[in-house]
Length: 90
Length: 90
DNA sequence: CTCCTATTTAGAAATTCATCGAAATAGATG
DNA sequence: CATCTATTTCGATGAATTTCTAAATAGGAG
Image 1 (cartoon, rainbow over the protein chains, first blue to last red):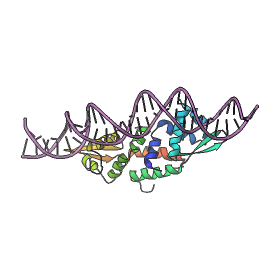
Image 2 (cartoon, rainbow over the protein chains, first blue to last red):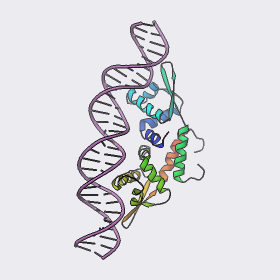
Image 3 (cartoon, each protein chain N blue to C red):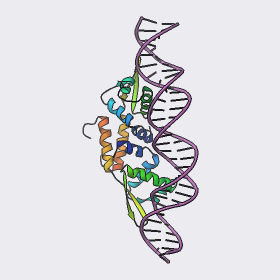
Image 4 (tube, chains in turn green, purple, brown, cyan):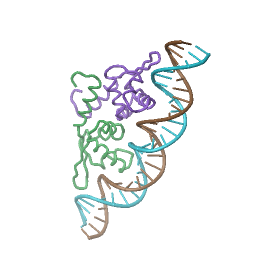
């Protein structure tokens, strides 16, 4: 994990929206792609960026690949930001 | 302010290091540039990106332009991330 | 095994980004 | 005013990003 990779992943609006969608539970690549105007190939690319950044993980079920939020990296980012902000007890 | 702008600003390592430097208090553009291998022109560009994202603000004192952290935007980002993480009391 | 569906990979075009050297600006000072 | 210093702006260049279409893969169903 690297902060650069994480922030880069978070800098794209489609990728942020994917993460927001996944707050509601796991979704297949197709279900995710259906929420966006971009092609499935483009969304697949975004999912891969999120996966590389360890912000999501995938599990295969038959023909479908499901994606889920991985919150552990978010914790590290939160700590970094809180420290930058000068917080006492992050 | 926009999250996209903020995360994009945070995605660059030089810019993150600038913010970390500014935790110690305000610094002039030249003092900041001295910490990096890049040219002053490049660092000036990074400072401008941080300023556009409202992560820093500047004050002129004579010949020098001082930069300071602006933590108010960090608060919004922290809240967004905490919500994504599914925190109870962010 | 062949076909169908879900998804990814490959390759390409357009855009944005990081960086530099050189020139411009802003203010202080002789 | 002429000049010096600190910093930014300009213009260019190579690298990275986003997006697409088309082709490839993986697994299930007939």
